[in-house]
Length: 223
Image 1 (cartoon, rainbow, N blue to C red):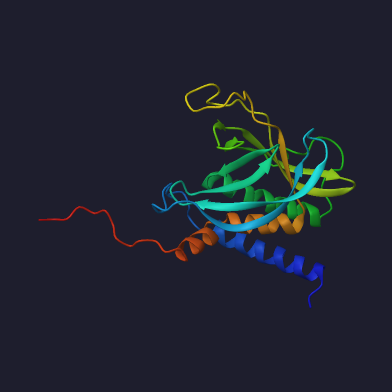
Image 2: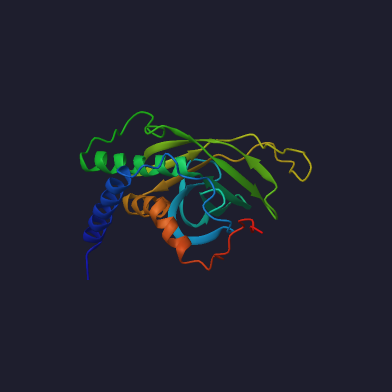
């Protein structure tokens, strides 16, 4: 049986191979609509999640879905009694994958900074989220920070979702909650690699290919 360190090394090595291959592919024309298919689950992954006060960290899991209509992934989990979904479109996913690669390089080189603000070290990206207790009746477009943070002397790759204005506050079908909660997602190296691998376009298209997708097109008939 392989040791944990060897398994992690294999994961990291495979990730860099994936990132290297992806960097050689022209994705400038990647479509927003991949297929007219409802979102489907591709994995259940682990992460740390900030507590109700935004101070501590609790280990949890989230379900990852792929939404072919928007070429986006959806992180689905429960937080503060709310069913929460965080959407990452193609651009956001590529940003996360690149950031994970940089984080792993800095980790191996021992150049991660233990002091100062590092939770936006790798920049920010536009996100979209929906949440609600019984139904998801609140929406926001947070600017998500990408970086890392040390917790009890251990580094974690992080995504930080700030409090954001509910776009449908008191609107038709909206909720009475004015703002979303602050959240931070924590990933150790193994979790970060696994997360990034599941965000790759290659993996998602392969998962789509395994679905029972109708092949009939909507091309008009000639007569």
